[in-house]
Image 1 (cartoon, helix red, strand yellow):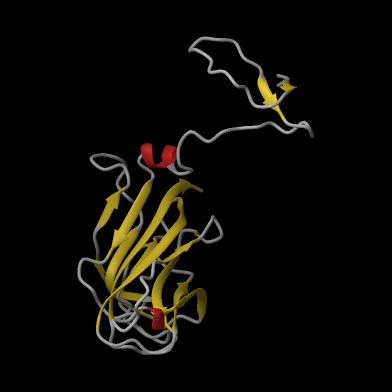
Image 2 (cartoon, helix red, strand yellow):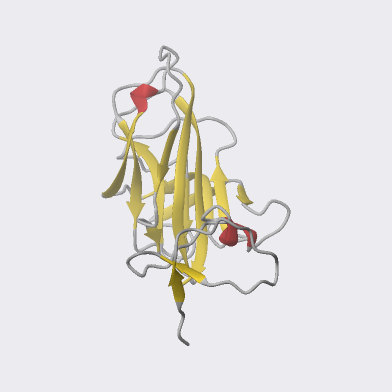
Length: 213
């Protein structure tokens, strides 16, 4: 099938349903498109987008932790990839320290927890489907506490936790968009951690979509 178009400036009229119209082509023969919905609308509508979040605020542990408090795990048996969309964090209370937020990265994980394994305890946290009211049930495991073997790999998010403090006069919106650059294959996990120990507490959210491998 050959797709052809016409090189023209954007139309100044509105076509009716059922009208025949040419595909608009730019000066270098590129196809011109206009986005009707947000980029994730189709995946969300199909029930493939999920959000895991903290119910109560908690501290973000240091990178050497074996007890993460916010963790996303793709079990080895899932047969899907978890494509990370966004991580968001909001300061709740107490004093921050100099440091930054990262994701600890775990690999070669099993499908379940067991004594002596890399994950020996896991408490599930709340997950909502982006299509509120219906949609798929997530095959991922999202947790608000776990016992793990300490991570040796990290993914810095470039988030300075010192900007979140009661003394700061400027509102701060701390979100990290992954733009498809981090995918959890089966048998991997990530958890939030900080480069320095802090007593401050935070609310967190991580968003992802699930796609067959």
